Length: 384
Image 1: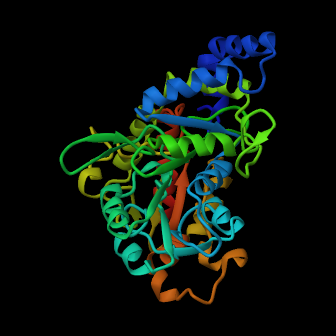
Image 2: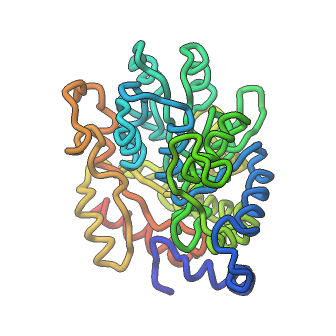
């Protein structure tokens, strides 16, 4: 059996090496390293893939979130509602802009932001909601947009983990994650479903005026060289990373299908295990292993019951199986984001998840032998 990787970037690269190398060499020979043809080509191809009017590339996913909020003109003190159970970047940019983060609990099945918790958190100061499509599963965007429209709020989709996923409306319409809210951000960190070989990110929107504002923000607030019309930042996707992403974009659906196939194999192996809760969805996202594409499995995350999760992490590592705990500490308990406004009783689900979750290796190169070894090792520990 080949060595098990949490993410096998080398194996994936080996299959597209010739195309990637050729595309990168084109950039080196052109010397168009910043805002070159490769960046514009990737931007257009991603717009076509997502069926969104505007893709604005930038330097990384955290910048993308920050720039999206800057583009909306949010002011210090404005409240922004987001999930407590997610990576810190989501709340980090809220705090950096001197906005007021309002953390709420998540759904115990999908791990995504809880709809009722959003409703309870809205105040006259609320200006935006940031749903995170966690681990690759679409949040309940139809309900979130209804809440936003009823309360005149912006919706900023954090799509860092769900590029290529599709959300299905109650009437059967399908749209790509990241194209539903007023604006969205994504990350091209190497381990993402669509990852580059360094840092990268992008902002998506169908709003022409907002796109214009954001295009200035990413480039020092300039629309005409040396004319600074808005306060901006320096956040650009370089041409080499765009060249790599444009090749990988051609394979994204295949990559996501491979992840779904691996997830299906994992969950089948865990059938009948009462103390292992496998990923599942709700409503239009209930059939996540078959025809439905609302989950693209950036992570395959279990809940482990009646067992020592941390001891399982050690056991897997001792057996040559990498794994991750995403996330071990709720954001509301992080030193940087603690606030007297928060009541522990309001985070019942999150506080339980951080004790139970464990993410198994998930990538495009997993094979049946590896999955069998991983699952049998988990099952043997949990039942010991």
